[in-house]
Length: 280
Image (cartoon, one colour):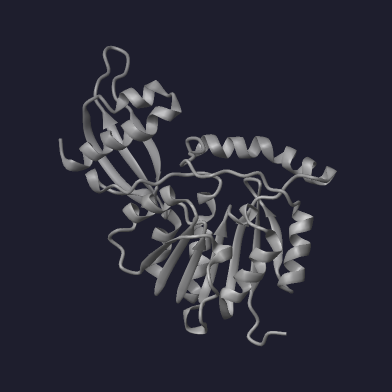
């Protein structure tokens, strides 16, 4: 069996078990007589022909979709995952790479987003108060020379000098762990003029409209979860959001005039703010 087939079986053993689809899972233990890989857009499709399976299955073609960003071969395969936060990673990377420069990820966790940002930035910095997360990030990012990690609380870290401020600051599912207005004010101070803040956050459902919108999203989100093989958690600290999206929008407008806060899928919101070239 060639190396790509070995990788294919290894990948299947890790990922396909969660599908509870024994027909597909068992298929990987059959004789694979032919395999092709081809890209369509940002996805890679593996197409392989299976040999006989007892007297029941003669030959069949199976298609399986894999996130192109997750593709690695053999023991060098990068450990990646999908959940309601990583679903926004590509959008954040696409936005940040327009500016390049220095990028700060607040609440960087195990460094997956930093890894995806690194090819498009002069330097990426991740900060997280959880020492276990930083250790995982150090392991993931050991081979990257333009990544720095800080095991610290963002609210207590000093404001960087003008030369060390950031072109992009990203905060994914971390803002609700901090004091809202204080955190937003400090983020605005850490940006260069013309820089951009991007927040993917969670909000509390307080109003009737909040509850209706979240209720309507439950079924489509569950469908998307199933299509992605289930939401995968990575052992990070979880906290319930305290502010509603209306309260978050009001705070953002007070601290950062012109900030946009929009509801997004997966029970998230996007906050975006460009720091003006001339501050008022």
